[in-house]
Image (tube, rainbow, N blue to C red; front, top):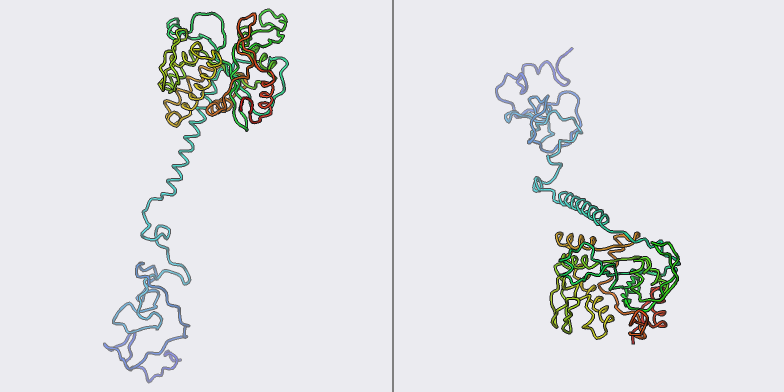
Length: 434
């Protein structure tokens, strides 16, 4: 059998041929070398991959013989059109390895991932803020003095809409030295009385601040004495006498009995605590429309706007002898001062300054005595409401009636009944207008 490929004869042996084993030094360009073996279908052209080194198994012809590597070798299979393939180890159909950096464009490689950094920073800030708020809450809640139990008050009226706070300013000298009492002009009277009583209603139809004159002539209802245990019959006295007799709980019972309105929360502040709060705030700016000189309280102010520290603020709020309306004029001054104090304490310069904020908050919490059900949220609502509340006195029919206890204030029963009904129903207050 002939060893020559199909189409060749013995006569072709010895003729000059170009190819492997050819004895001639130069190829014969005029003759075409026929394909050997079975024809293969055309292969698709692959992209140029000169950037990749030759893989294992690459022979003389890159890519497993798809094209000549020797530029002097004229052999061409007809498939690569002169391109050299060096990635010989790749299997047909396999994808070439991708570029580094996950396929990101070269211009974006190495850029910082700002979105991720901002996200982590925001998360860290939220965590720090939450920790600070939580720690502040537990710190403040632990300092609040919940000492008044309103659950022992007898014969309480039904609650209405909104929330009613009773704010009491007492002449308590707790924590004050003899020198401080002299400096604050508190006097040396024993016991505890109240100079200020304000009914503060917080509701959806507006906030209303109603001063209850301490000399209001009221009925102190029947009660059980805390010391004797005996039942004390009802009697008539000035309103502040109830506080002197049995403290906060009898004062709350007397107000509820006479005005038919339920007190939801109780807040009390003494002389020293009041002065400390003002000093922690850095003083309060007040504008006076007339000069005040009162030796009893120590108030000494000229007409116009001025800065008051704690001692001066206490003297301003206690004085009444320079007011044309006496105690009624003093209550108006107290309302104006509380509104100004709340507005300045709630300013951004106080809230956003942590040193000032914690100083004011600490002094306030130390100064207050509240009921057992008072929460920090309730206290915040009260404080915010004082800034822009509608301010008024209890309607009065006679500011100076003669009583066994001396001159007292007779309140207007009809107007007062209308006012309390509006507060109970959380309606807009119209009493005293027009």
